[in-house]
Amino acid sequence: MSAIRVSILTISDTASRDVTADKSGPAIRSILEERGFDCRSPVIVPDDEEQIKSFVKTCAEKGDADWIVTTGGTGFGIRDKTPEAVSQLIERDAPGLVHLMISTSLKHTPLAALSRPVAGTIGTTLVVTLPGSVKAVKENLEALITGGVVNHAIDLIKGGTGQRVHKELAAAGFSSPTAESLASQRPLGDHGHHHHHHHSHSHAAPRQRTNLSHDPSQPGVYEVLTSQTHSLASSLPGGAIHRINTGGPLPAGSDTVIMVEDTRLVSTFQNGDGKDGEERQVETLAQIPPGENVRLPGSDVKKGDLVLQKGEIITSVGGEIGTLAFVGRKEVEVFAKPIVALLSTGNEIVDLQNPISEASAEWGGIYDTNRPSLQAALEGMGYTVVDLGIVPDDVDSHVATIKKGLEQADILLTTGGTSMGPADLLKPVIERHLGGTVHFGRVTIKPGKPTTFASIPTPGGAKKFIFALPGNPASAVVTFHVFVVPALRRLGGWPKEQCQLPRIQVQLKNQMRLDPRTEFHRVVIRATKSGLTASSTGGQRSSRVASLSGANGLVILPPRTESGPQSLAVDEVTEAIVVGEIQIS
Image (cartoon, rainbow, N blue to C red):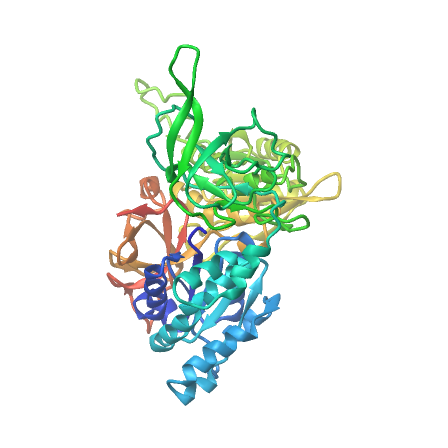
């Protein structure tokens, strides 16, 4: 059985503001990893019911974990919301686990009676809520792990019979007569598939790596059969063993697989040239219990099981496509990704493909960096882009190009032309010439103050949307990630709670001055042994597109107030938006 995957959620207002205050999350990880569990880094959320539900629900639906462990928020405090949040999601309660945790804690303190743990399953994921104190966490985990309680529960949740866990418990000294009974009563006619990890071996015969399927007899010498010499539909004769490939079906009457590494070659058939050929006889070197190295039909997915939920995102990781292929589905109904039209405005803008003459005494303009950078970002996310080029500063050109874009695409992105200058025509064109509605035209953020969002009716009656982004390069890219990406995801059918880019807590490596507006400071986020850090990319002027080179995050700086701090200090923990792959130090 592969290592049980565990997701850890720390629920604490304090720890959500200062990651160093989280003691129970790291304690859970340390305890479980010592016992062989595969733990993800602890995630921290405040005592907010919706945030707790969102994490647990998303984690369970995506199948990222076999066991979700939360810590904190299970008491009688005003902000303790964990039981209320998690119980809404539980599909099958596990009152026995709750009793086990409470009774264990009551042995140490009567105050354990004030704990309100919840346990149960969501789909094929086990969920357990632990208290917030490190002492209580250790006591509860010890109770859940000792005796294989959690291992057995997860084995059953995943469709197993529990035989393997019973055998392991028996080997460790726990009484398990049921396991022996199940093993002896198991029908020999069951067919299954086996799966194992390959290891090196030193057989003389140069064969493809295989397993040998046999009834669990004593170690000894056996005649080797193959699919060419023995039908899988026929039971194995006494004294014989059948060679099968990894993933292949077992012959009738067999229910156990011994790996080649646990056998020794005794003799081979001779080829026509006198050289050794296939195995003729092998000696088994180990006593293998029934069911070893075998996956029963339906143990991975049973008929009628839900393998992908409606609204689940098909990612580039490949797991969703692999799951569909695994169950034989060639097609599923999906939301189409929106097609995006892209244009820049301004007489001063020059396309990179039309070089500026250095010989001319006249000012040649500035290269358009917005279209290339936004197109790269969009296509990197898998969106189809319609490049409408650069539009000069006149009304007719604006109207014609915007109409063309709305005909060819589902959403239009423009850069420039949204400020207060006489050549900034976008807002009047949208409202007066295209009958559109400007929903907002200025936002109190830095960079990106002139960001505009509008809708325009189409001949078919539906509305199409326009994001008019600022012309300064850094502003355009920042507002793209803050405003446009969530809108594109929503148009593409993403669940509402997953439309925003991920937000995480980071430790600042630089002092960052605050502005009267909320500021998105471009940073490089790195994963270190002590946690996630954020380093500034340097000057943050809105025209400095180099501030985005190498950036993978946007630190969200709160607006400055008269009575508040003027800056965030080095090592202070704050929130950041992840816009790229996190680096590892």
